[in-house]
Structures are given as structure tokens and as C-alpha cells.
Image (cartoon, rainbow, N blue to C red; front, side, top):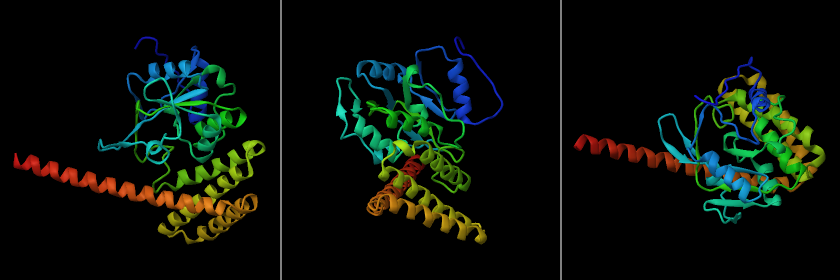
Length: 290
């Protein structure tokens, strides 16, 4: 392939790999593609046009999740965060987050995976953090939205494919206790790193996330009959939730809303699975009949 440079280094994590690519890159704009993702042919062109036209600090595109058996679903961003509150722009399919909106949503979740982003090289001075386990992209985004007012353009049209499998390092929604432990570690690092620029409610929300992940780990350890590991996890979870409550008592109501949101998410996923199963059954019957 023309104009493609392959660089290899010893395994040091994804942050170090991205930083090596950044040092080798010569262009004025940066975007990274993870090995398990696929860009649409117009991804770079459309993203660059939006960045320049809309005077955004950075842009990201919606995506489609693809399972190992080829099924495709809308992204978790589209399903649970949407874009109705973001301002429409002169570019078809692109909306704009104002600074208060971008800060709020990135404190809530990492809604733009690394493969979704395109930004100016001038925005990234120190590169990706190499001391986090799986959250180097989240750390980068938080550094942007917490250190300055950021206008973010988002494509409502899917422009890339995220292939979902059990080996995705950032996909922590399965029976993957190693990734849960890594996520807990990362949240502690993020709190320490950004504590001085976080509001009390934002720090409380991160401690609540730690508490939740610790409870999930209790379930994993119980399933594996590692009973001796459960009491320390429960103590740590209670301690994290107490710290959250001391920082901001309103965290209790926020956690209740999050619990209801997760319940809706589980019901939606279950419904989608049932619909897919029915469709596959009908397709098989049609093929047999023909």
C-alpha cells in the first residue's frame, strides 16, 4: 500500500502504541483506528469537513455495532444518549454539542470510542496516557473537556463499524473480571488526575461507578466460588459509595436513575435478541419452503 508506514514496538499497551503513531505522523489532523474496527470510505473526508466547517474542537461519528455472527445494531451512544438536545448544523447529519453539554456527557460516559474521533494535531500536546489499563482514550477526552470549553461535532449517521467480541479491551459488559478490575483501577487514576477540576458531583459519580464495578466483581467471584475474595470487595464498595455520598448526597438519586436506565437497556437488548431470533427462524423456514 502506498503512503502507509508500518512501525513495530514491544507490547506496552494501547496508549503507548498510539503515542508511537502520533510521533511518526506528519499530518495536521489525527485519527486512530483500532484493529477490530472498520471505517466507512467517507469517514475521514466527512469528519474533516465537519471539523473545519463547524469550528469544532473535535468531531466524532456514530457507529454500528457488529457481533461475531454478522448481526448489526445501533450504537450505545445512539440508543442511550441520542442527539435531540444537540443543535442542528448546516451540514446534513451533523449536530453540535456546546461546551456545557460536552462536559456533562463525557463525565457520564466515554461516548466516542477512539476509532470515532478526528481532531487537530494542535489539540493533543502530551499524547495518550500510558499508565491506564484500558481508559487512555477516556482520559484524553476528559483532559480536553475539563481543561477548556469544547464544542464537539457529532455525526448522527453511522460512519464506522465497531466489531464486538469477547476480546475487545474496552468492552467490559461481559463476564470479564480482568477488565472490571482494570476499569476500577482507571477510575481511581482519573479521579486523582482530574480532582482539582472536577465538581463534587462529578467526583461522587466516579466513586459510585467504582462501587458498582466492585459489586459486579462480587458476583463474578461468587460464581467462581472464590468466597474469600468477596468480603474485601464489599468493604471497598461500601467505602467508595460512602465517599460519593459525603461529596454529594444527591448521588443516591442519580444512582437510582442510572439503575432504571440500565434496566431499560437490558430490556431493550432482550427485546432485540428475541426479534433477531424470530427473524432468523422465519428466514430458515422460508429457505426450507423454497
